[in-house]
Image (cartoon, rainbow, N blue to C red; front, side):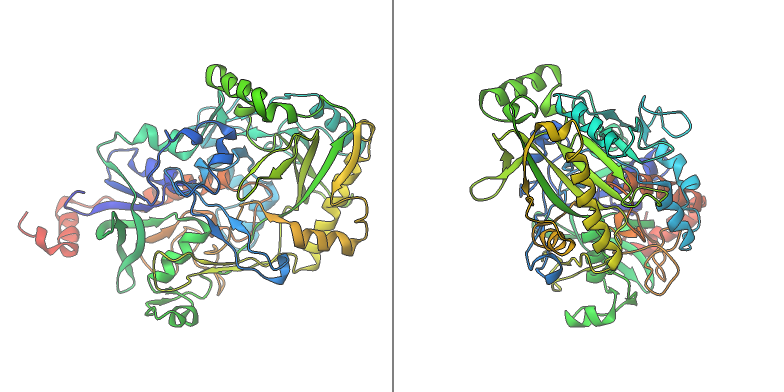
Length: 558
């Protein structure tokens, strides 16, 4: 660690933080420190193959392994909440699906008062981060760090399903990240030549040899250092020792929807009632910290086939799985290179809608639980779908469990609490059934095994979703952007009432996007870095030295 303060400290290396750290260090003008709690980097064996996600989730080496509190909105169950704990954060352990969401999502942010965040204004950043030959130059980037590819049709299922979706009134869409999202399509992936593209591989790996960028792994932030209403540094725990580091200009927190509000609350920033409950002194009141939690809550549906060879079931077990592993090792192709959920459907629950309000994730195999923990591909020939509401309204919260910085946060999901969420969730299941009932899929399906044909009424479908539904790891909103009483950051991502502190991760999203959240977080990171650099006015050497000496008096003799 250098003796003088860094210009910028970035807490977290995930989809937001990895981008911010790389971009702030790009010019070579500023010394940047990136703190990452995890110890594994992009060379970790299971982070490279896309299907390696099955060995990343619930792996204590790379996953925080959080879980939600039980409540009646999701069947009084504790639900696992995977979060990446390695270089690249959740971008290193996710299902690698590339999905920006819709124009409507960002225009909604703008309409809520988040100036500068309309689709027209964020599109340049979405294009800046990607490199792909998909779609048109008007909407897609060609030279960014994250290389984007598309899933391959590895079995006959995909064409059968697409034709049935068409018969159910859902068009083909060759680029759901282009002008329109609606349609059925092979999934776009943050993968290139069969390997995962994360902020660790695509932003930090090229940047880590810069002399002005320090990446410190195994460093878990425990509190922000505040002097009055200014953030001047970070305390972190590394190898059992608490250390401090100072920032001459800004601290940018990118811990994610769970860990960012936790860090703010541990630092005395939040709702006084929550802080006092845990004996944490109140430094700055912001009642919105930890509130407004949203996620996509998905129903799982399964069907079996009446003949072999349609699905990928045989490729996922035994000696055939061995062949697939060899195929990936030597050719970077096949099932291992594809990831989880190779097809996407974006549909309208009602014909009068202008934009799709439900999403389906489709895979030509069935996942079953293993004895104990974990999952595996079933030998049963069939397919499964996740269906969920795109723009959920119901909100929960995430707060500290205690003043202990190592304690897991309290995650309280609240699902299906609004009439819109309930009606649309049921409609999503019915739309999935429309596709399965259309030819040619209906000709090859033996039966619906989940939820099963006995579940037909709206009430029965809703009960099934409550009792078996799962979050899709798209948590957002716990430090939302805006200017209302519950907003935590402004449109420049600056924490209200605290200077020298910004947030750049999914927690700042005021509403959830219509899709996966990793790429929108990378966009937030890109935009944040630009805003920080635009606000960073050159200081003469004497003024900067004085600022650093004020923070570290022991440097006065230099």
